[in-house]
View 1 (cartoon, rainbow, N blue to C red):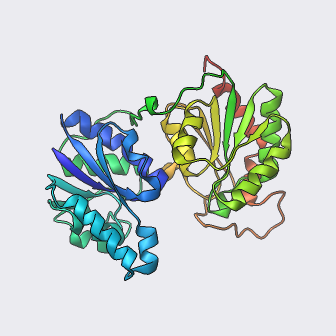
View 2 (view 1 turned 90 degrees about the vertical axis):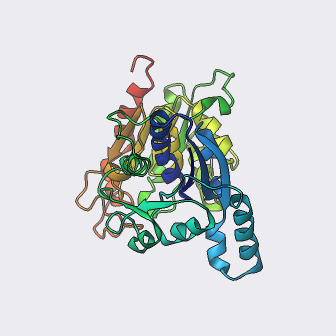
Length: 342
């Protein structure tokens, strides 16, 4: 059985889909998936053994110039890749209008979330099979449920297995003990204060660990350089490709992350991960893994689900909710995860 999966972004959403692929592979011997995904994330799907082929798209770029020659050429290339293959199922796991439109480029029965389940209900109009999945549950559970319904197997009562192929990431042969700090995020309301990162780096250095930080944008690179001023234990790395960051995480002693895609990747790799939540709700999008811990702010307006902190009263830090998630608390949770016996 061959399935075309449409799940274009984001990194966290892509990683949240891996346990569903694992379920399907166990339930249906020989099933394989082709995966349509944003070109910037095209390396990630192939980390799962059930993915046969990746079809890159550039929706983020195409939407800016819908009628341009480059957009027409890009869509033509996608059609060319798909035209020789008829799929047993074309599954839109995104539930957005943009992903629903892509479904017409492929040949095969169309399935996706129904009007009550999709993030953008209009998307459901194009599916031949419309599937009802509870919106108010963790994204991983939603994906596992969607796959079980669309492929007609019983949802297994097992913990999610990401089944990432760790052999794709070069092993650390230096013996260096290091932590990775994942501070980068587009929402300012998710950003843990830089002074907190610096203090946490000091605590890690005192315990004999090195700390690795990197940035993806010019602003993040500057932030990494400021965090690097916390002491000699901090290594400020250049901008890393997704595959390079995956290798760095796979060999880390642990990671500390805000609500960001690389935090989900660290947890999925089985790396001990402490994830910090202020404005967002870990019950719906928390990083899950065998050694993953969530630290959520205990604050009057958290989780607010707002991109920017709107709290107006005086506070020691911004976002204000992180007053309740200070470095001492994070270190007290991280330290037991670093013990081989934990």
